[in-house]
Length: 372
Ligand code: HEM
Image (cartoon, rainbow, N blue to C red; front, top):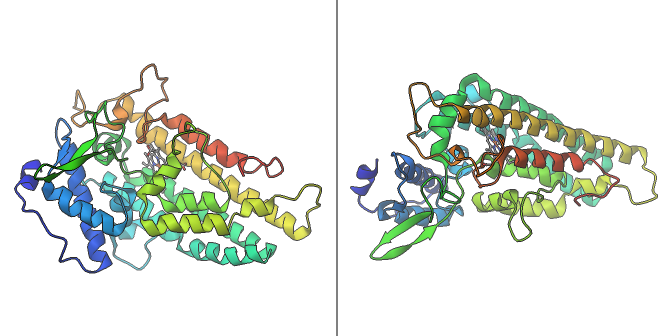
């Protein structure tokens, strides 16, 4: 792979005109980048101009960093044989590193979850108007739609087990998703040098691809007024906040817009001393049900992470005595407990995910005014 890329001439982006063309270029270059870095016994820390020059230009155009983001891996990397993008059986991936069914299924489950959300995104946009006019019934209906959506997303997430093998995922698929930030132990102490030729270039440290970069799940948090900031130092960006830098610009801006216009939690909280009307009471119970469902979704996700990362990390793939690829999660933190694998972003994995679920649970304490 490295030899083949080194032999390429430096492609110009002048021929790209439509947005789908720019997106396609972004996906191809992102896959080439991660293959170049990770397909070998040791990671490669210098990315050649054949990739960096077009990739940086394309990334600037699509408002994403030059790395394999969730958008590159999943959102812009599928085709569908039918009309319904939320049916994973009808979807196929355009690029994978391994051509394994496990890899495709892992990516396509995410695509199906995003596609299934198209209806609730419209509903949420509609709810911003209802918030202005305090139309509690419309907002309650929105919350019920959100709850139903989260339930169906959880069911799709559980379908991961159907065709994605945990051992193949952990040992063959996941290593290629790794970024260049906090990757010292994996062999990239300075990150990756984006060589632009003629003595120019820069070291970059970027997160790898993570479904945590999905705008959709953050949208649900934002609408329900759930904040995730307990897992980082005061001078650091939280994982969720940093993940926004890895979303397409319009997605990022949409989250900011919705946060301003549509925080339903604030509305569900009663002003002190006030008694809830029947309509407001319905809104509060709809809010609690939706937040509960999101807790449940996060529990399903924690089980997935246990089965797909924690358990396979303890044993090598059959017939292999050692890992061939550098993997971000193959390194335990010093003195770490069993569940303290580092996550893509470099902090402890299961405790981070549980904390995220606690923050979701705490949002249900409507009368305690926590995490407003
Ligand atoms: C085999 C399947 C999956 C595995 C092994 C997995 C693993 C992980 C890991 C390790 C993290 C911690 C952050 C990081 O290191 O990047 C994470 C976070 C996250 N993942 Fe997944 N994931 C899977 C599927 C999904 C899917 C399909 C979604 C839905 C789009 C999803 C949504 C999230 C979200 C939203 C976070 C941020 C934490 C939160 O808000 O709860 N994951 N995942």
